[in-house]
Length: 209
Image 1 (cartoon, rainbow, N blue to C red):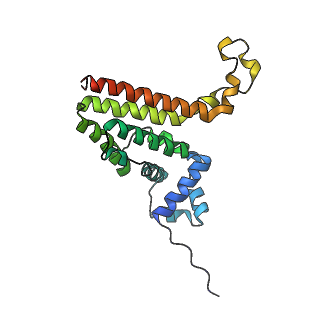
Image 2: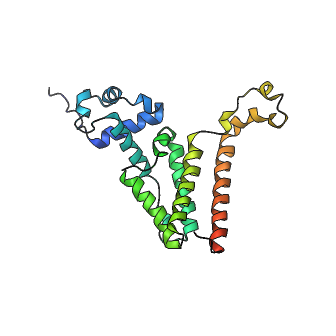
Image 3: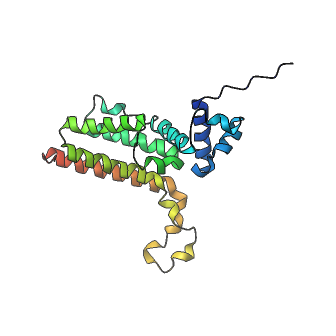
C-alpha cells in the first residue's frame, strides 16, 4: 500500500506554524528545529524557504500587521480614520502579544508595515498636517498602541494585600489583576480619546506645524 504523500511545505505553512508557536510559547520557542518538528519535516527543508529564524519571525510580524484594518482612512475624516485604525491595531496586537517587541521596532522592510505607515502618514498629510507634525503624530500613535500591548498594567501588582500595607494609596492594588480587561482596555481607550481630542483641538485652531 502506498504511503500517504506528505503535505507540500510552503512559506505559508511555515509562517502559520511559526505564528502559532510564537503565540503559544514566545519567540524564543520558535527555533528551526522546533518548527521542523511541528511541521513533520527535516530541518534542512526549512532553509529552502527561509535562510534564518529571523526571517521567519519577520514574516510572522508581516502576517500579523496584514490583519490590521486600514480601510478607515478611506472616505473618513482623519480623526475617525486614526481611531478606527488604532482600535484595529490594538486588537490585533492583543491577540498576538508575543510578536509585539518585533513590531515595536518599526516596519523595517515589511510591505504590510510600510503600507500601514503610508496610510496613516498619507491621511495626516492630506488633512493638512505638516510633514514634521504628521511624523510626530504617527510616532505618538505607535507609542500608545504598541506600548499598551507590551505588558499589562493591571498584572504588574502582586495579589498580596499585606505587601501594600505601608502604601496608603495602593491598599487595593492587589485587586487590579482581577479587573485586567477593565483597567488595561480602559486605559487604552482613555489615552486614545485624550490624544485624538487634543490633536483635534490643535487642528481646529490651525496649529498644524
